[in-house]
Length: 636
Image 1 (cartoon, rainbow, N blue to C red):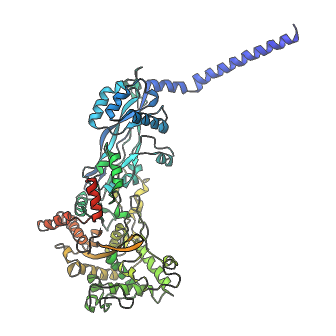
Image 2 (cartoon, rainbow, N blue to C red):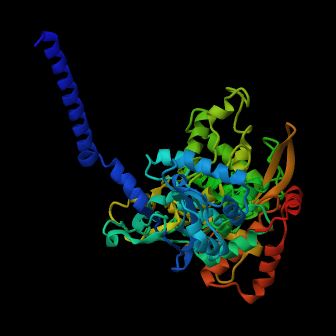
């Protein structure tokens, strides 16, 4: 046989052997190694249905559920399985057109591929769910998915409890793809801060379906099912009755208030006004309401209690007194001859005249003498223990930071602001005074809580807790305990340890308390008295300026009030701010007084009910914002 014939024969044999090996290897891969086609077959025959867990319930201090769960349904779509459906029929049911239908299908494919289920229409109304449920066999590729949603039985505490929303691509990426398209996560409030506690774990139910995509029952008797695990419950310090009263008193006003238990740091109530019914962000019209709230010129979704910053006004004076007492610059008997204006600097003015109203510290606090506290501030800045005003200011700022001002406290809500306490870097800036261009007179408005100081209502309430506790505080927080808490749940540990401020003597605190009690007995807030309760308080009337076309324009003053009670055994500390409302005793004071009455006595006495209704129905919203509400026919 010729050599070339033998060579060709070998080549042909090699080709056949190679093809045989390749086919055998591929058969082995398809049947033994790879499960791709098995998965595709399973996907055709088996429907893996997500089971979403109930989120944890949130309770108030008396065990009442203030955030609970209810069941609604999402309409899901798996685009690859949508074949030969009556598009006009489903569009009619959902009140959309064919353009919107195609757009939703494209979004589902883009976000989640055409082989995985995506939300086509979330949170169906009960009527729409019923119609779809009985006609689902006509809509291959569509399915109904049970979805626990949140309900707010008391319609209160929207800024505290927060809301949940679908996880977007950014959240999914940040979670390292722990979340999936269709998952709902906490977007604000306690829902966001305690997401890992409240969320629970998804489950999977395997269902078998026939060649017409109809569910026939459980696959393998549920052997491969993974049950959903409900989220854990939270028990809070919130008193929902006190919260309800506070929101009622703040309605038709722009402002906020915070009430804290000084002994624990537990927040008893926190309100920001205007507010909204949190249920509107949990139902089928959530997107529409969310867009509406985002347009609100009064910023209903903005939590002024933790994010609004204001000069504290005269409510700051007890803190200024503590600094001077601790530094040995004054004693409780120290007086100042006020003639209606702090004459050494030419300002600030005082609403009183004659030395009697500032003859000692108690009288100065009770009558809120501006001249007295401007002078006390200058003593601190020009303290002879420090080489110059710059060093004095930085020491003063250390006190402020120790009082919890000028930095975030670390509350268990997202988005807390830290406020601002000015320092030498600000005043040495050429845009302000410049190096060596200022002295204690230049900035003495800080001594009466004005100037460049900016605090949140939360910080004000916490500072009052420090006075009530004589030198320490607990980081303000809402959650008292987590159901089934384990040593690994470290999220609450930081709230349970007291934070020690500067070591100021108890006698100094007592001297300041004496003045604060006199504020209510014979001073600027006599209308805030509560029978048989010793209240320590301070009023504040905060000058308010706005920048209009580049000019600084005076606006109506803010009404501010801080207090704690009872003096001998403090159980509640409160800060109230009502914007553009005038004197602190006029509006903020009565709100705080009614809260003390409610919390310490359990109810408002009959004789004070007319006062409650008067405050609650007073409309102090600025005219420009009122006009927006009229135009948009907006209701809480």
